[in-house]
Image (cartoon, rainbow over all chains, first blue to last red; front, side):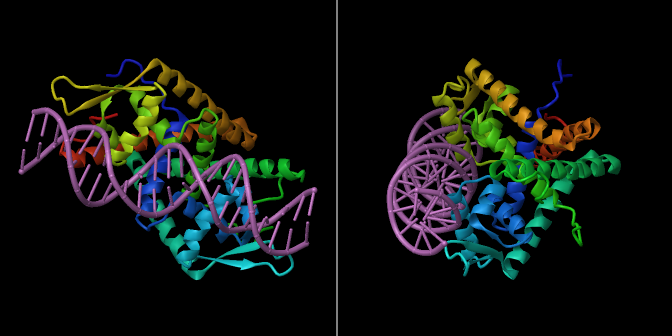
Length: 157
Length: 157
DNA sequence: TATTGTTATACTCTATAACTATA
DNA sequence: TATAGTTATAGAGTATAACAATA
């Protein structure tokens, strides 16, 4: 019926998916920024600056987002003893449970959307492709972080 | 090397991709919300309430985002003559050009990331999968909007 | 009364610039 | 001096509640 059915842009698709993730996270009272922080911290405790670089946000953003998570007892701030300027951020048990709830909410919503494809093969294909993107994102991040510090590429998750 | 290499969650992947889209959009001084608005308006002029439902945001959010776009002459507000409560939102030529710049910036960045997969087949696979998601998103949206109004499913883009 | 849209208000994320504490 | 992190400040997106204008 439509005269020219232009393929939708990939940016549009990502932006829409991101909105669904936002809405799913809202059901467990989390923002996207908080979610990204929790996921990153689930891979291990980290310093604030390191998180800022990995998540590609400013240092004050990390402070603000972590503030909210600390209030909810999801994250703990601990000053390093060797270098007392540094602050180590650690996921608590509360944070781990919260992240679990968040993952459930998000997965449920995205799988529901993929389920609209009807054919299981297509839905699985769509979900599997995100793993492909995950690999690409990791490599792009490694390259980005390496360029900053001059380290070789491929060291980082 | 890693003892248990857990597959990253799809929510995490979407959230990371979304951050890259945000950063790409920042290069043309657009927010994700403004970008979503422009894309939706590029498919045709619409009323504010209709946009709010399609984009899954509140009515005041639409007002706020459109305010910024109107200031930049990217969108025009026009009062309907039949029903003077209604406001028709239209993309201007400025808006269309801005959207074009945004799409270029986003596509370039996402393709760069996909390019990390090295094998062209994989990169193309990843990008193609987003079209699959786009189809699923359209269907999920149709279902969502139909449930609200009681209309049959499948009417809407 | 119901609907459309805006205003009022508040909270979060974001950034840059300035500051503190430590090295 | 340089680095790690926070504070100060400002702007945007989001939401709910209250309101105005129109139907």
